[in-house]
Length: 161
Image (tube, rainbow, N blue to C red):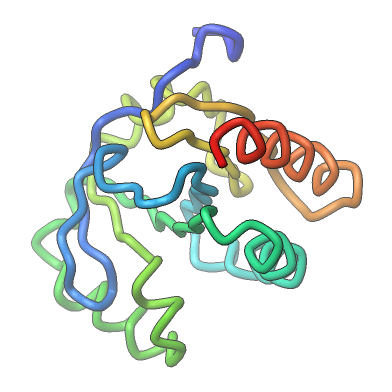
């Protein structure tokens, strides 16, 4: 499926690290939402590269929400309590726990639905309140990617507020 045909965030469910159940994209709370998808523990370093920029963006756009989706194979579901518990222990910030939603799913299908070619890096999606995918960036933080994301946010928030 080509990237230009990816229009809607797929239906997936998971639980935040503070225990709340989510059905996405329905339960995304922002008028626009940043959804960060990671597949590997070491990708938290890439997410941290984005952290300062995302905090600034959130301060400027109160109707924007950010979610982190560690994405694991459905085969790990029986170990969910242990995996999620380990992540919870590693994240002391209550806000970060609230917005981190672990997804146990058929990763192949999930990646195809989102046009994700591999698990080598993170993918950041800007998703409207209707589940529509507005834009996508991937990988390490760069000022160009930040501008792309910020421009898409500005265009979509100004229309809705």
